[in-house]
Image (cartoon, rainbow, N blue to C red; front, top):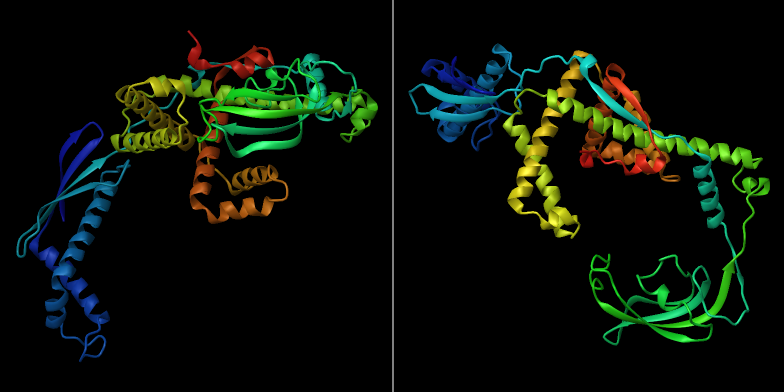
Length: 443
């Protein structure tokens, strides 16, 4: 087989392959003989069918298989002899395939770009951090105490006010008809908790126990039950009992409820948990900052085939979200062409960063180990107490989920390595600022 390069433009290289009549015939006869040894035909013993009979019955199919084998061989030779790392499978175009003539085809190969080493000393990012304050600890203790609060009956004959707990029966109707899930009995409702539909609790304030109130509300347009979204409803609500929360004393005895010997011990547990939580949020921001810093260093072209695959994946997610009514307000208002341009840019960025991270891993011999995967799956399983076995089985049986986990871990491993090589400027902020930080809103 004679292979010559005919064109090179950007990452696309084109090659022409010519198989002589003799070479094609040799490959064809070999495959014909292999078929004759296996074929079974009435009136002949297996392996004893005359060659001319086999050729007459299967000749055209075998010629097609021979051509396919030669194309695969040509593709391998092109990649090996030219030391090409392809971004996708070569595109094949058969130019000539006739009996008694040369077999000619072309191969169009999209290569991976050449990526130069990065001087990490020139890369600098901010590392956002937050410390646990006494205010945060006190707020966490209050949340724990509120979750443990009990109520007691209040016999005062007075109007209801915010923060009261009222026991109610209610029955909802739309256009005079009851609807599923719209009724309840002996429901404990804390006024001001915003537990019910907006406006419901406000209409009970000022009323008294024993009254029956018709509460008029409108379900939000984005209500999770589509049949009710945006519709006006009336809830016939009977006020049965007034209750108030008992005070929970936060002391050493309170700490023992959570398995701690003292309040100081409980505060330490809270501090450790919040510290870990802030560190996780900080790590997410650091990863984004590193990727933002690396993106301008991707001075190479992105393979079109990889960009198309990434864009198709993004657009499919968009269309699925649209079908489920889960688009955000910006997406709802945007023109489809503008969104496609935006998502195309995102696809290019993702592909370039993915290739860059892969090259960093290659240059620095970073690889995932079985221990990395086992540890990650174990951590995931710990999130579902009592279902650990099912989590392990899920990953064992679901190759796609395992591939997704492997890709995520690989990216995190490379990002962690980059974080040790670049300059990081620690920037302290409050927990509120850490959670609210949005790099896209920076000037």
